[in-house]
Amino acid sequence: MSERAETLANRFDEANREIVSAVEKCSDAQWGTKCSGETWSVGIVAHHVAESHAGIARIIQTIAAGQPLPSVTTEMIDQRNAQHAQQHANCAKQETLDLLRKNGASAAATVRGLSDEQLQRSGTLRAGPMSAEQVIEGILIGHVKGHTASIRSAIGAA
Image (cartoon, rainbow, N blue to C red; front, side, top):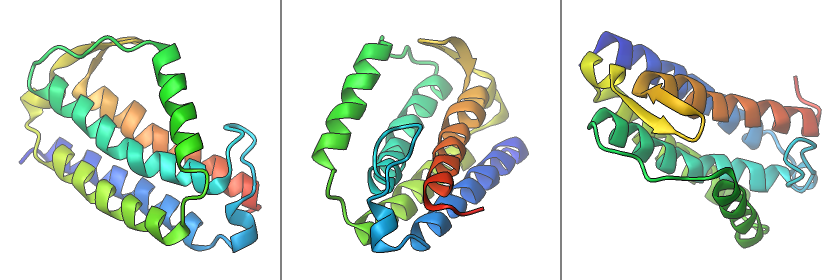
């Protein structure tokens, strides 16, 4: 196991615990409050994060294995996100918490399993070339932190 991978996994675990904590504190009324950045409810944003853990982990695994990534456009991501928001408009808080924990643990395990060499491998995403480590920091961890801040703002939490 790589010490760098362990550090990154711990940072992701902390970010995931923060969103879990924010969701746990939501009242039923707050669950339906719109987040200004996403224009989705707190529930949809939290569910989006929970489901995204698995997809982002697959991107990391693909890069770490030295495999090419499929071509994905901004429009494709926007369409997938809109479809997710529609399909999960009535997602339950407990289901979302369970998914955050399950997919979070799986994503953290993926990161922990990477070697230093795998962390340095790069793949080309729509934003350009990124190493697996950069994807972990910027996308996996950054995605959670950004949406957690949006949820906290919507529910008036610090």
